[in-house]
Amino acid sequence: MVAEVQTKSVKSSTLKEYNKQYQDLLAFLISTLIAGEITATENYCRLVALLDDTDEKMEAVHQAYAESKHVRNLVKLAKRLNLPVVEKIVEPEWFTIRKHFDAALAKKNLAVCYIIQDVMIEILAITTYLGLAGIGKTTTVDGETARVSESILNDELEHFEIGISRLKQLLQQDSDEVHDALIWAHHRVMPEILTVVREGCTSLCGELGVVCGTFNAGDMGFESGLAAKEIVRRYIEALERIGFDQKIVNSLVSGLSDYQPTQESVPVKVKTSGCC
Image (cartoon, rainbow, N blue to C red; front, side, top):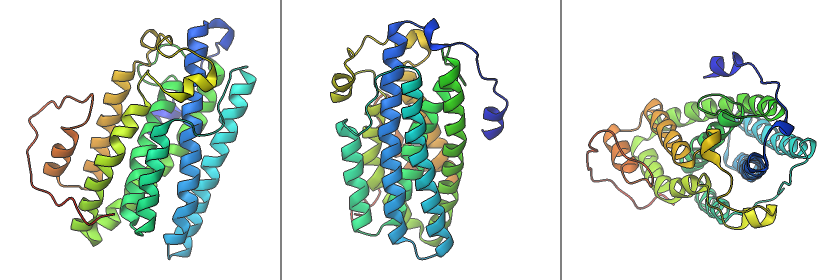
């Protein structure tokens, strides 16, 4: 993944070459990413109190600092492009995600915290930044947005890999507890993650002064259904890399909105209480 990002060439096109639909879409995506980066900054900051190891504390602080820089860089990007931008969380999905993360913090459940932040939120960020960097199926990206997105993407990929390592270690220590954490987080947070990427929106479009559904995202390679499927694909791959039981993974993902499994999922009985 990192090699793929490093070998990409940034386009030289400017925002002036694109129509208002693209500019509205870009304002929406940048504002959505800012909300995610604010959430990530706060999550990593609050994780520090749960960590006993000094090096782990420093690592979380460094991640929080990096995420806060992403907010600043996204705001600067929007201003350079003369785009409206919302510098706060307004969408209800982010508040719901924060509520569930807070519940995990209150129970001192590191596994749930890592699953929500290092897997679910990071995958949403990675998928969006890949699109804005012009990597993959995206067909229309201005050069300035591609450059900034590619730079931020490298940080997000690093944080994602740290999360994979964290969860592998926790899974080895207590498989049952971490599987329970996955089930609890999955049912509460993944539907919110997928809702964030849909073209329809609630309060954010009103804040931006744009009309929901007029972005023409499909022509630009940002079709929301494809983005949701890509998030689910990366999510499944991450859970497999960590080492979660395949039957449990199949059972969980088969119920996700906008996801059609390519093979029959195996129903299993799982413990769903006692996590948070």
